[in-house]
Amino acid sequence: MRKYKIFAIVCLLALWATMTFTNSPASIAQAQNQDPEFTELRSIEQKLSSTSARQNTIPPIKKKKMLAWLKAGLYKDLFTAEPNVHGSTGPHGGNVRTYYNPILTENLRQGKKTWDVGAAMVKELYLSSATQVSGYSVMIKVEEQSGSDGSGWIYFESFSGSADNAFYGKGIQICANCHRAGVDFLLATFRP
Image 1 (cartoon, rainbow, N blue to C red):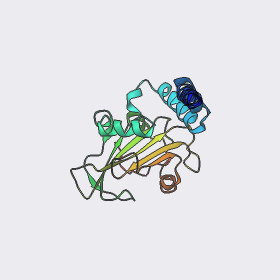
Image 2: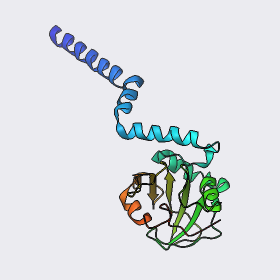
Image 3: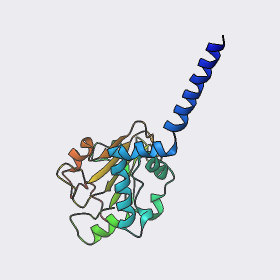
Image 4: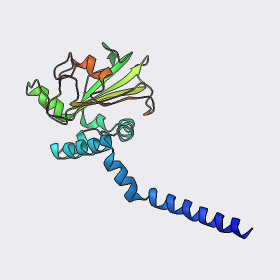
């Protein structure tokens, strides 16, 4: 019986040590630093934060933070909006309304054909409604060159307003293949 108690104590100590040292903030940070996607997103965040003094005008690039930012409507006061909700001319479905951040608005007003890093667009997706937002599409330029495959952009689209069922990623092909036809991947025809 004593052997089993000692064995149980040793097992509990081993379990405690494993949980304590493998889930420590240092080990989690080390694991994240070894994840190429995490490292790339952190690098992009740093680049975008130094791109403009108007940091609040660039949407967060991490999916869950972006969705929280969108749901809070933080873009509505800072971005230039299309005048009205209207029928989508693309695959976004139903009704939409597009908003451009100040970087993209300024680029358009200057007549540029290649957008600056940090240029962003938010498209509210109303689907069959004209008053209730159901989801969002977002594009953020994160590289000087868009690339022929759209890898210079981060794309996000959720028809349900959930991060779980969203298209999301840098240069995601389902988005880039369509947007390739636009001016530096911008298909929306609205001009401020």
